[in-house]
Structure formats: C-alpha cells, structure tokens
Length: 242
Length: 188
Ligand SMILES: [Zn+2]
Image 1: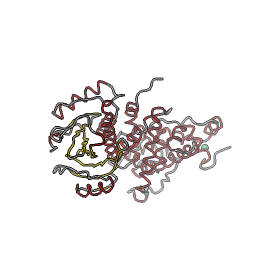
Image 2 (image 1 turned 45 degrees about the vertical axis):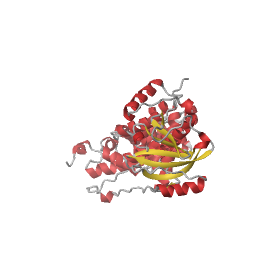
Image 3 (image 1 turned 90 degrees about the vertical axis):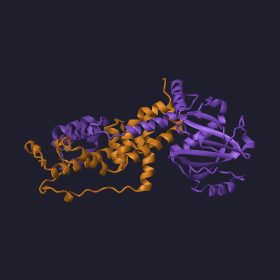
Image 4 (image 1 turned 120 degrees about the vertical axis):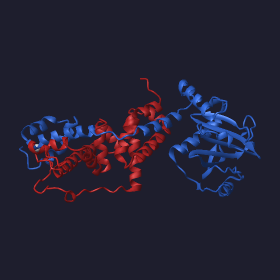
C-alpha cells in the first residue's frame, strides 16, 4: 500500500477529501500519513483555494447597479413595496416634468400587458421579426399580416428598429421597436374600435400611465389606438408627439 | 419559513452571479449581458424560482445554461500556453503536480487568472463554485446538470491542471523549485 510514483489513483479522493466530501476518509488518511506526494497535493489544494478566494474582484459595481435597477423595475405593483413606489413616482414627476395621473395597475390591467411586452423585449434584447429602419417598409410588412394598415407616425427623431406582431388580449397588435435618444421604446398600434380606451385622447394630449419605471402614452388617431412605452426618464417624451 | 420576493432573492445573489459570469466570459460587458439575460429568464419564471428549495443554486444553474448555449454558438477557443513560449531558464525544472504549495501561494493574480481561463468552462465553473462560492458537490452537480461523480473528477483534474500551470508560471518567472532561498529571486 505504498505510493506508486504518481499516486494518480488517490487524486480524486484526495480532492474530495479537501472539500470535506469523502465518505471513506480513514483509508485516505492512512495513505496520506505515509505518502509525502499526497501530503503535498493536499497542501496545494488548500493553497489554490486560498489564492482563488483572494483574487481581486473585477470592478462590476456599475453593472450591479444597472442590473439591480432593472430587477426593481420588474417588481409588480401589487407586490411592490409602497415606499419604492412613492420614491419612483417622485422621480418620475421630476423627470417627466408633467403632472402624471398615477393610476394603480389593477385599474388599467390592459396597459400592464403593454408594459410587460416592452420590458420583456428590452430586457432580453430579443429583436426578432422584421428588421428595418424604414417606417413605410414596416407598415407594409405589418399590414400584410394584420389586415389593417398601422399608420406609423412620421417622427423625425425616432430611430426605427424592428416590427413584429404581438397579441394583447387575444387581438393581434402591431409592435414596433424604436429608439429615442438611445432609449429603447415600443410603439403598439391596433384599431381603436376593439379595445376603446376609457377616455379618448389625442396625440396632443395623450392619456399617460406610469408603471415600474416605465411610462406609457396612449392616444387615438384616424381609427387607430397608439400606445408608446418608454423609460419614464425619457424627458420630453410627451412633447414630441404630434 | 418566510421567504422574500423573487426580486430581493435575486438581488441578494447578484454579486455572486456577476463574479461567476466574469469568469465565464471575456469582458465585463459580456458578463453583464449574461447576468441580465439570466435575471430576465428567472423573473419570467418567478414561481419556479421562489418555490425552488435552493434559489441561489437555481440562479446559477440558469446562468450556466445560458453561458453554455452562448459558448456553443461562439465556440470559444481554448487557449494553449506553451512553456516554450515563455522567456525563461526553465530548462531542468520539471513542473509537475509536485509543485509546492509555495508556487501556488506566491503566484501572481494575473497568473491565477490566466491559469483559470485556460481551463474549460466546465472545470473552471466547478472549481469556482466550490472554492469561491462554497457550493457542495450535490449543488454543483445540479447547477452543471451532471452526476456527482463528474463533479468530483472535474474538480480533481481542474486542481491538477491549475497546480501544473502555476508551477510553470512560477518557475518561468524565476522562483526556485522548492528552496526558500530562491523565493525572493524576482527579476524586477
Ligand atoms: Zn500518495
């Protein structure tokens, strides 16, 4: 039972032993007692663990803050904690610079679907569907599949990214991704006869809702209903609609 | 037992997930991206996450699955460092598993990171989960989706490879084989 020249057959057990995961440790202990090589390896394991734990952590605090923000934005209102909600609404009021009618999500559950879709896409950066920066081409692609023409507003400030279909309450809706000042936004368009917002709103004075750090502007025009969702900090978002 | 909400649970594990992700990817941006996707995936299955007996392990498992999928599509090339490439008087030194723990303890951070990077993702992951995050073999097996026996052999081999690599680096840098007198023989 002396060691051979490399003691490979003890290697795995030795490693498990240093992790406290070896069942039949007396046999190993007896071997280590008389084998300098294995003793040395055991010391190596401990030294290695020490060195790994001592490695300077990469500077990821910015990443961590951004990720935490992202996670907190996903917290649902009904589960959310009131103080976060209150703090968020103050920030939003300051940033948006308009009086926001803050309504609990449960009163406008349909809007939550829009928020969910927007957040889902932005969080996963899952840009699928029809990739284009031309709103007219997107319109053509969408109308072929939807049976209505979603008139995409001719916003000169928008960087158009992609168009896809989504379903809100079982109805097919045009879902257009765009960026405004590098902030991701989503524009949903569908015929207004079906859902009918509780109040009619025009592009000049849209109906505004805020949830989980995102703001939505809703309005109607020429028989279509529009919902634009963007981070609530998108300053002047609502001044840009026309 | 009172359990906090999924967001809080996830935020509690965020720094550990980021540390792990930084070891599985090549840049901080990639690490952040990987953790972001992990979080989105987990919060898309809030119920499974919150009811899991080991939510932290669940989060790491999600991270590993995504990292593996990405690795498949990007086919990360294993980096092979040749001893001959190193400017050294290595000559007679035969670095082996006999490497003294002094080599390891005196290794430079860069060397440890480089040796770690040269391990395959599975080996690196197992070693990190064990030594830094303190997961048990059972937990690592679940995270990596392999039997416990595989974890055991991954760890043993990862340790041997690390020790060999660090001994190579150490002797290339001019550390003596095992003699305390040569320990201070730094070149710069
Ligand atoms: Zn031995």
